[in-house]
Length: 193
Ligand code: 5GP
Image (cartoon, rainbow, N blue to C red; front, side, top):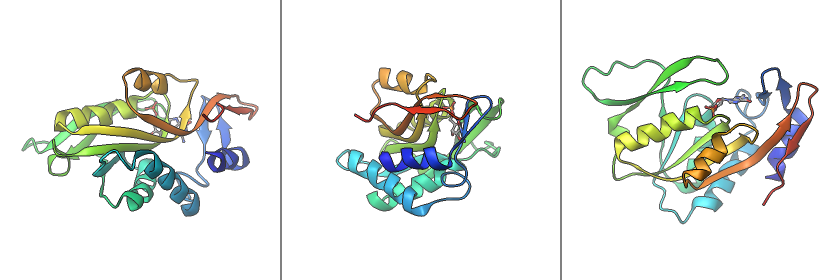
């Protein structure tokens, strides 16, 4: 998606440790016009796939999920990172290793909001190693929900998450794939198909 690539080149910052900072438009301050275009692009890709729910993980995925859901006219449900008690067995849980913070955390999602009747589009801001996505896929599996597709704003193509998911047969769409970046701020995108 040219609009997103141009914005990354203009406002993105490469930080040590292979971290791309896009907090002035994607995941802290939010450019709603750009987010709406991202949502529209996901809608165009998955509109005939019977999606009835958009699934993401807090916090950065929520804005993208909401703007996507507007186009589909379906609800958003997000996995929570805060520890929820699972005394009654009323939540699905999975453990995720965080790339950005270098530690493990649990995600939870209420059983009320995901089940076998659901066909979900999973969205997130970044795909890197794929751990966050693995947690969301695990939750879908526990719920018996069908994964209709995965929509990512920025895939870091030099990390293995994207290749693994494509290899597993998921319909994965990444709107910008960064194939190379370095601490000098050089950045190269994979050519659009
Ligand atoms: P993964 O689990 O695929 O390794 O990483 C995905 C998650 O880590 C995303 O939810 C995203 O919030 C965060 N993340 C991974 N790489 C980056 C990055 O380069 N920049 C930012 N801002 N977040 C990232």
